[in-house]
Length: 348
Ligand SMILES: N[C@@H](CCC(=O)N[C@@H](CS)C(=O)NCC(=O)O)C(=O)O
Image 1 (spheres, rainbow, N blue to C red):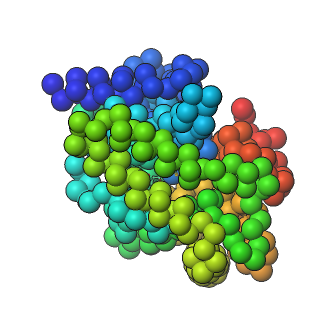
Image 2: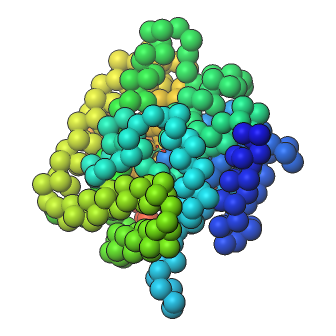
């Protein structure tokens, strides 16, 4: 019964995807256990796809357009704003048990900022009849249900705590502020990205307002859209706020220095020793994003971070799901030239 309800919602969410070519099966199972709603460019989605790659888990992939656009007849809402997808997220939100997001901090962490009902990624597990939201929760969930071929969270308490510390640090990165915001002194984002970001908030807000108007009779949906609206209005207010942007950059500077110390003290090449872990997945994706945004000079004086990025970007999962996905889905960035060489060795 519950599975049928979830399957129906998922089918309706899929129906909002304009191009069926963006709905594919990854792996060799025509009826996979998992279904992922995500976006190629989304950092949080890249984390989950990297874990699925590491686990070699087949899944139905729904690559959604997460930017709203202005068309000749008015606003075209992003695909993850459509009601069935939002309803599917609300199912996942029940498990999380957190209030909706109510403002903007630039950090997409559900722990500190609350639950965003209109975001990707989202995982459906048809075997367990569950819908899981939030990249960190999805990654931990996948590691728990499938322990091979690589275990990303160790069983031993101390080792697990060391990995979870890195997971926590990455979860608090102000990624929204860095992507959408303009730094007052050194905005190093690719020029083509800056152009997209000029109108991104206006389009998001217009799309959500249109959704509220179109579904005014549905109190649950309206509450979800209102939460999203307050977050995006908050983002628009600080996108050129010098103090806000400097604080975000300052935070990143601090955690990169800490990462350098952690790597120097680590017994192996990874953040928590000899074994590749979830901490490395999340760092790998996040460091690739920082490089894309032109922020690699932040580790010019951090040799352990520099070595770590280079090593992680060559790992087939991260090369495909972070480096290649970024290059293929976001406006070009010359700052990625160095990392892009991972693709010469990795299969397409
Ligand atoms: N805590 C959530 C954050 C989700 C999130 O912020 N997703 C972004 C992409 S990384 C998104 O959906 N952006 C489009 C939008 O907010 O409209 C997670 O880690 O999954």
